[in-house]
Length: 270
Image 1 (cartoon, rainbow, N blue to C red):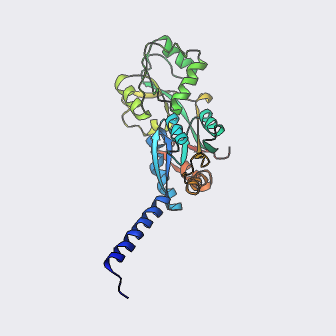
Image 2: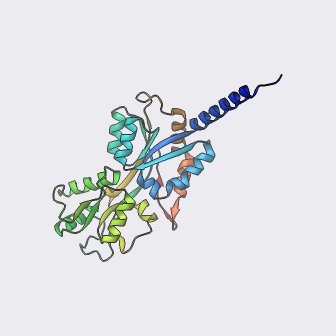
Image 3: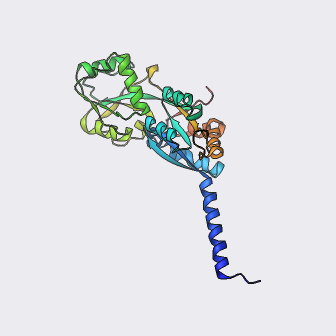
């Protein structure tokens, strides 16, 4: 039996469409904080997940608040962020299914190595008081990110929410650009340690405050709720979450280092 050219083209076109749909089914969109990308973690982690699952992960890196808003709109399948209060809220509102702790590191206060405000130590609140009282240049991300939310908490604890000093400026930008601004202007800022370790344009900047237990930085992962957004890729998204919180993903997270220093510490289930 001879197949006509038109039937052959139709069959070929159908096969291509099916192949494209199959490929699309094997990919997910993850809305995540900039620190997971700018620290280099995703470049290290995602190829390992692809090898284990065959699933591609397309990352949209934003401030945590913006990433969570993506989930509310149904523009992502999974959220991977670091503001536990906001994460628990989005679950309570029904826009995400369940929050799973994945890993942690810490925030650090970065500033000029000479430290003109004399902030060096392990007390973030006392450091902020010195910055405000001295009207010293401070760059805030000002972008609803997890880092920005943590910074605002620290100002509030210091009772300086409305008295941050004349040197306080918001850039409305990601962690990398904020670090670049601080480097070029000799300003202080709060950063996550992961992005700092991977940051190349340090200039005269140095870590000045670390070790305060309040600087703990927890990351969580959540599936966007398919009851709100039926197009969410539940099976693939949950497979990514399950891999992250199980031994394989936790091992990859633990193995990521910069200059021999661990960037994140696994803690799923804790």
